[in-house]
Length: 76
Image (cartoon, rainbow, N blue to C red; front, side, top):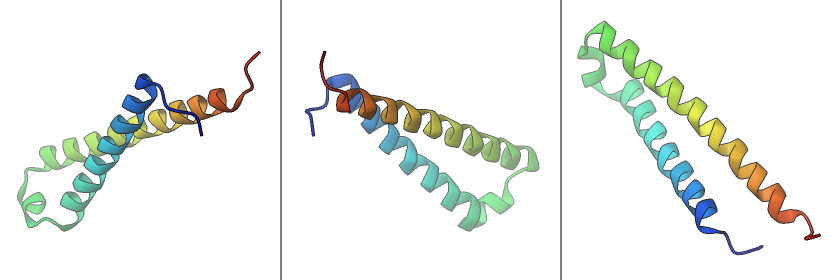
């Protein structure tokens, strides 16, 4: 595998950090008694935030796949 360029490395780091944040928020929503005590509007906002984070992660997945395809192509 080729050495990753700095922007590719940043993309991977951003992806991994976002994935960890998503997992933490999912756990908080599913398991924390604090979440149950929040105002309904705040709960909805957190769920909306989680949805947006998942969309953002999907966009990063696509960008990473595109970078991988570019690096697999032979140089002209």
